[in-house]
Length: 336
Image (tube, rainbow, N blue to C red; front, side):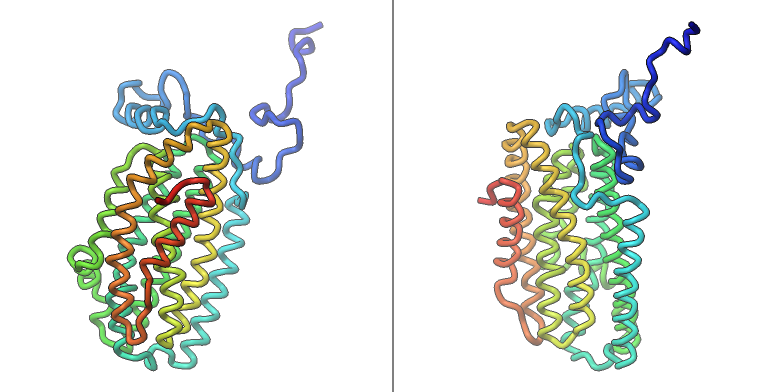
């Protein structure tokens, strides 16, 4: 008998270890992240190369670890194919809504005082939105499992979707209410200098240098994102409706569907981690306690912009803080 004939027959796909047929989600996602815990170093470079040292310190060296990250499954189980199909349908919905509002000359009919509120509250959010996209992609890049990588990569795409609609609406408003609305220098000046934006800017820009992948995940997904989405989806939608801007309200409502999916991913990842390693709950709580005061300060300062609308919103900061604590409670964590 030949050596080949004597070998035990192996499965067609030896990387998949469960004794069942893999779903499409698993076929295109499983163990794409081949370099986690790879010896002697993640990448085929000198083990002492800066790239290898960075990953070893901030991913393999993170205290947020379980024995098998590849057992995690995102609740949405999105692949590139069905993510594109999902968002194409959502984008078609928004395009049709925009066409309908434009036929009714919606932008020209808005209260000028409301447009000034949009200029100070909504237009500069393109910068915070870009930071959220960068943070999502960082967590995706540093994640120890491709199941986590894929989920946060799509989250980064969702953030860019929100930023792109901001750019469109800003330009459309400028055609009826003055070219200065679309001046990027004015929006940047608000983001960098306006008092109401600085606590949010501090929160997000400090998160950009939270290099430990576990801390980046906790600060973003458990603290900053829930607070931010409560402001710029839920509260912005309510404020826009109260001030006669149905289009902005519909857009914010649509982005809230993305945010709900992001929270479900975060909750599932926390649950998976603390079931595998119960002591990780304390580590996550430490990170939450570190970032939560910055998030509370951010929503308190930003809420002042909501109060400047012709029909102002009330207790915006309180509602945002409540939503953040609800997210933490769903993850089994304490919001203080």
